[in-house]
Amino acid sequence: MAGNEDVLYKRTKNNLKRKIFVVVLIVLLLSFAWLWFVRAQSVKRNGTERQNVLIYAPARSGSSFLGQIFNQHEDVFYLYEPLYIYTILNKLRVMSSSQLQNDSLTLLRDCFQCNFTSHELYLYFISNPGYSSTLFRESSKAMSTRPLCRYQEKLKSKKKKKDKAQIMCENRLEAKMTSSVCRQHKQVTVKVLSHRIKFSEILKWASSMKNLKIIHLLRDPRAIIASRLRLGWISKPHATFKIQEFCNRLNNDLQFVKILRKSNISRNYVIVRYEDLVANVLPVVRNIFKATGLDSTVDLEKWLVENTSWSGSINTLEPFRTSRRNALKTANFWRKNISMTVVRKVEKNCRLAMKEAGYREVEDIHELRKETSSLLVRPSDGINEFLLQQLHSNTP
Image 1 (cartoon, rainbow, N blue to C red):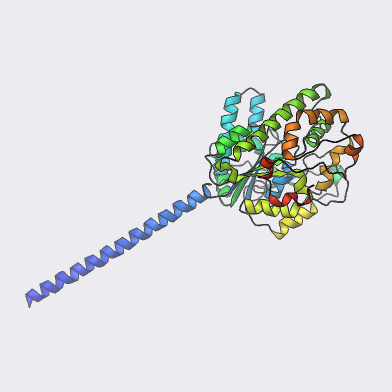
Image 2 (image 1 turned 135 degrees about the vertical axis):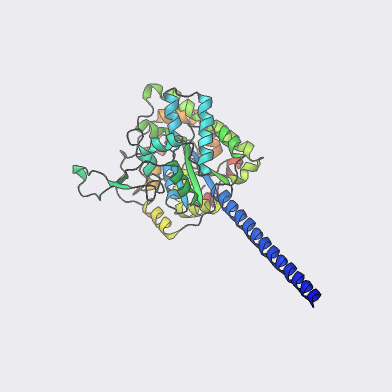
């Protein structure tokens, strides 16, 4: 009897050990599965799986309007001109041009990875109206709404008593919280102006970035120069030099398109002409969103209609305004006042870019002033390959 009890005891003990082993094994497997899931989510939040968008465009090309289209989408964490701070530091001779380029690319990389821990200076800069325009923060819904923004009512102007009370953020952006809120969005979209960083540097940097779409926004160079002249960004004594400088950069940028056709980056590169965007805004935006992993929404399309068919007057004193505007009317406004002398200078120096992008030269002053006469033609095969297909449906 005693022997049988010993055998039974040993069997029971061994069965218990097996059960404990199985339980421990299951716990370990579940733990490893959980850790894998957490790591996968972390990787996704840090940008290696998030679809990110870089809007690259010359100043006064309509990039603020395109950026605001993305900003209206609830899944997008939008950043307006983050590289501006380095332009200021460069003017103050705080850093060299090479360091400027390097730090600019580092900031872009970290923005797309939602990692602002090394960029307290940038966050401090856009959080303080005394150092920068409120435009840099207020242009981003994510940065100017809760939880990143604690509201404070702005003082009303006596001349604008009928306006709704405006609000501003009273708190400074903190790196940890900003990074956390950024990771909660499906996409990070950043707008960069072409004079802040070379296109060649962008392309080299983008080759190592995963899930990044580059949207290259173009606009008639005559319209861009006309806008800069009107705003006083170009003075008449320096007009010829500034036009040559701008055209050289634009010509060089479009030459890289030919190189892109043979690279892997071409799959993540899109060219959009501003004139096509405002003339066919809904289908173009739907296709841009489709290419960048977003779905269009009813609210966003309502915003688009409201901001491309405004029947009121155009306020030329608000050059960065993107709301309550007739975008199509604004797109041709430059043809009213620009001189033929300036037009011919731009056409001469930007001839290569205009031919590639599909902008034709005007015959005379009468054609220039006739805003119903389209100055668009079919782009070159190189540019056409990157343009969204249906953009040409209304193009001669």
